[in-house]
Length: 264
Image (cartoon, rainbow, N blue to C red; front, side):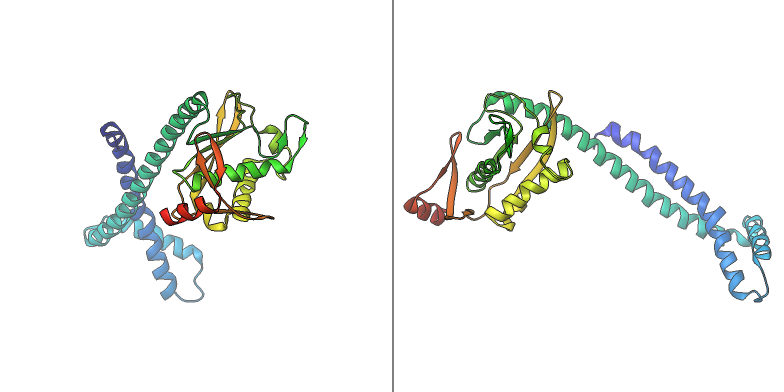
């Protein structure tokens, strides 16, 4: 945390400590006394006497004979306030870090798009919307999974969905319109379901989905970590090992597959 952030955060902790100490004396102390009174009061006693007893206990809290007990309740409240203040400070720090990261990612995404496809970047216009024919084409899902498999079996990489090969940002609206719920959550579930079905559930741990805005349009950013062991794509024709080569994803033949597996 930066020094200025630490300086600005401590008044928040101090306020929580002060409020906690006050509540310990003004709330916890009388409440405890009322509970004690109710346990030992006659069964016929109502809440009226209890509240009067609580008020009397509060007024007596600062008498010399009660200062020790009052101090213990104040200390307990102060401790709770300190914990609450530290938690709030940590939460605010986390929020600032997330905001800074989001701004950095937005700038980084525009830079990635300008660089174009390469060893660690793949651009896809959509996941299932066929722009050429203006309709849903579920066979477009397979190239998405192939790209992810290539990154898993290599050094990792980034897949951007909603960006044409030319770098034009198309957005996700046509794809979202085909999903139940039409939301980013549904889009993320679709990607992870495809990964689980075609590459195995274990591969999902290395695939991270994020949504960002570029040119007032949504883009899906899929960040893929290198898998610790070879990942095979399963379809109706068998299992295939794919790797990223340059700006393309290539399937290895039997001999190349053997060498790749032995090398991992």
